[in-house]
Image (tube, rainbow, N blue to C red):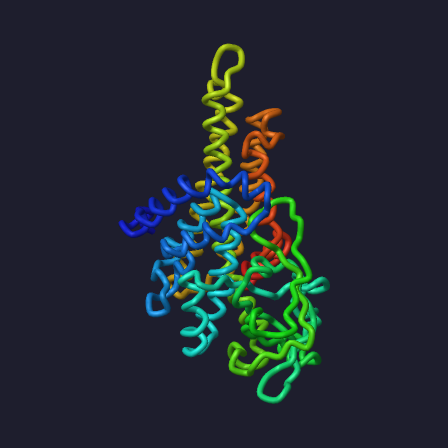
Length: 381
């Protein structure tokens, strides 16, 4: 495997890094404090082509390979974990559902608008009683003329309150278990009965609204169904599998930010008449932090490489997401320790990195579920 970045990959890294350093990092504390959706930054990212990075130019995407997409997302998350989630949910989940399972009319009408940033996307799968247990969902979509009437609700929907296009999963055959789940495109501004119940006050991941949604006799036309009836469960699994690579990227970005901040602080902070970076205990922490980040990056790129080559990558994506999310929290924790008492205050960003890192161990497959997936894949080899 060639570990050298291509010219295009270096360019996307440097372009996004410059944008993040100039526009996102100076706003990160404000975004964290206010928890407001940074629409102006989304518009700027759209102008740079960052809202449709992995999709073909025929749908107004940037046409980047998955390595470049992961690199770009990691840089965005380095500036703001919440902004990283906004882009990941919009692209890897909502956008990828359309790209993989939409017909040409759906792609032209809806994927193009997502890729240009004109629209924001969301992925509505989870429910109060259906998190990891997807078939336990209770939202239904009943045949009604040339469309469907949807009733039910969803929880933990990233971008849910600001989305223009929502990929929704509902049971079209409640008695068929996982084979009775179908997926649809919902347009909140057009579809009567779409209700935003509210947004969560979260520990971290601020700036990305996490919404509770309700559907009251919401009618949607048949032409907005993705694929055939009963294909939704498999579609969701395939989409989440690819999404795990980008959550690994988000984790890498946050971990890199925590490491950079800790290294800078250690070189400036003095105790006993010398910088604390001169002490072996601090050096060992920094060495371990950097090694973990590097290992997570390699796992991320291995999974991306397999995806690009069209090979099976279920285990590798799960491993990348599992390891990157856990080391992100560990690296952020050590960053707080290096900052000492200051790390426990909001005067420094170290505590924000820790709060943002924790989410990656929960959404798009908890660490416990991912270990099950890895073990099942391993035993089937």
